[in-house]
Image (cartoon, rainbow, N blue to C red; front, top):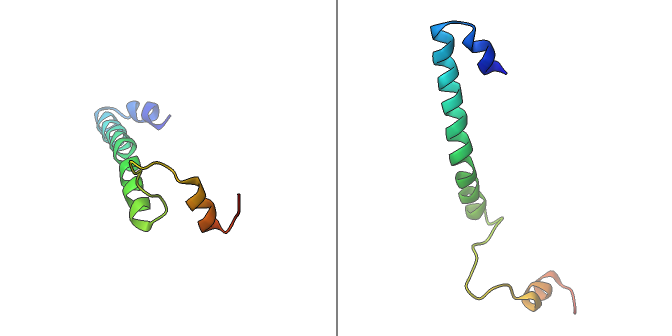
Length: 66
């Protein structure tokens, strides 16, 4: 919506609109990757292993029984 308003401001408005749209593009492309890296370093998510998911080990770590 603001991109349409900026177009009405002439050449400077078009320049600002292009900068804003490019910033949104970069944010949408880089944001998820950086979020995954941050969550992995914080220990909130773990990388997949080739071994797969061990249900019994998970339940034992949670203190539950079969």
